[in-house]
Length: 177
Image 1 (cartoon, rainbow, N blue to C red):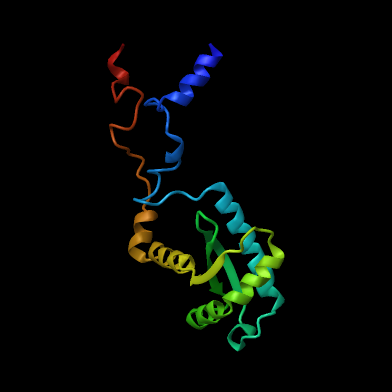
Image 2: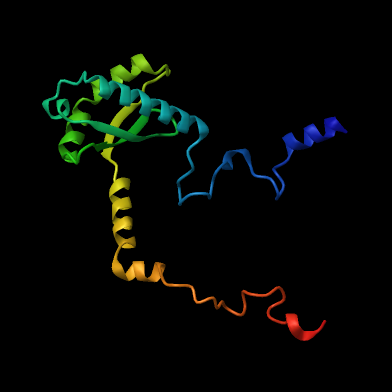
């Protein structure tokens, strides 16, 4: 019987309750996008740490980057591990456009330094982008602190609730059953 199960798995297409092996993660994200694999996440995190160490050492001799402290917030890597996008934020509100240009100019040097720090078969090509998540968080925080929104959030609870949501049987507790 075990031989039959093994043979049937190999010879037939997956049943309706099973996914085909090549459909892993399909449909979870937008059209054409898959969730990153565990390997992509691990390699991206390792590259983020290595880039942070390289930038902290101050080995870049670009005048724009010499006086600027940068935070590498995330590194996203392509499924084939050949391209990586590093999201950076200048600390202290520096000019991110100039910093991004300088980082992209120094991409080859940073890639060579990454090759010494991270043991991968192929070191990915680097591109840098500004991380806008902190700006979005500030916008949301500002919205939440507007008087109109604060008034709605801090509105006192009157103790009354919707009749459809209270009670164990929809409001007919006192009918004597």
